[in-house]
Image (tube, rainbow, N blue to C red; front, side, top):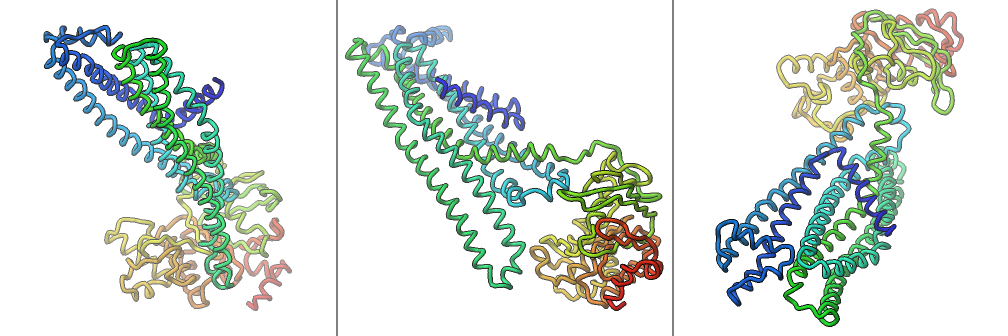
Length: 596
């Protein structure tokens, strides 16, 4: 009994997961199944009086057990109990069952669609609100696998789970009808049915363990696949693409081996159930007739219900086993959702107004496992241009991540017009930011959509688009393409060069016309001529936007109002380009090394 109790607990534990998304709707589906099954049972019941009326012209209600009230129903409806009236009642019962069965199937389809939509929407929303510091420390393969493959498995699991519940409900209804017809026979067959369940327990456990193993291996495969795509150029250039492909093949073999084991278990369960069910029914009939001296008529109706119910028992076990094959994905998605919910940005806070005075980094420390920034104090006035320079590893990008609100400081505050950023909805601040990195990300879409981020293509936006391209020195290139602004960029911008991607990224931020512009090594991939054109555009905007520039090539920071020199996570000196040349030996050496 403990094993059955545990299975029932698991059955309804999983119900809680699906109930979060669908609520009472699952119960509605079960109620429809119950009513349809009752009508089917009543229709089957009428076969016995139908045969009796056909053979002898009379009906013996005693052979129907506690279902004899259906004969009384015929009289209550004002009809004589005869062959024709029983046929009419059968048509009514089976016709009603057919209508309800239609609603049951269509309702189940609607539930599956609703569940799929809600869980995918939830994942999208959770990912959008996910804290950046959690994301950078996460396994990209797990995120990718969970949001794509695993969600698909969970949707399939829901279909199997709902069918399991419906089949269980139908089985219970048929068993109750069998009890009403002949309680003794029903109990004997019920005991035999429970016995068959014990036989399959080890197979269920194995299926669940294999499902978890399959999910874990799938995570690893997705992680390797993502790296294969993102590092393809390097692997191809050094002749290691095939070697890396062998690593992927190993994981594919592991996935297929697990899938085969799950399939074999399913085959054993599928092929073994019906012979066992028939064996039990035959043994019970033999016991009733040979040892208890019962006549066939006394338990024929109960036997009909039980056989019908045993068919649903087999379906139940099949669906349950199929569901167990997806429990690894279900547990993974459930745990993943819980993790994402724990690391969500709080968007219920107040809105930060557009920047009016300054951005201030006040006594900030930050680090992950080791300290990166130490006691940073920096004030950036509105529409000031500042440059952050320093050797690799000095903390420049980390400082910008803090200023962007991507990560919160371990100590200290980021103040926007004197207000602590952590006390507000960070999106209202980030909407004011334009951010260009050394490796700009391009979407697999047209140039227009990449620059405008899917703005409506109307005359005003088209004009803004071309103006932004001109300021980024990329308009002539785009006009020379066959489809001009509708030309595709390919996956991650593979159809254009690195420098062209960089200029399109710059154009994107010029198009947005944001208050705060952050250039993180934004001109590093550009030739000197293009860099000079973009620098000229930036200089023309000086005093019209707040510029924060990270640069190794110090020629791009000459026009800055203020240069911040970082060294080993600390601010060594702040001043104009000329002041740092005069007062900072470190800065002077950096400039001399670049022969400026």
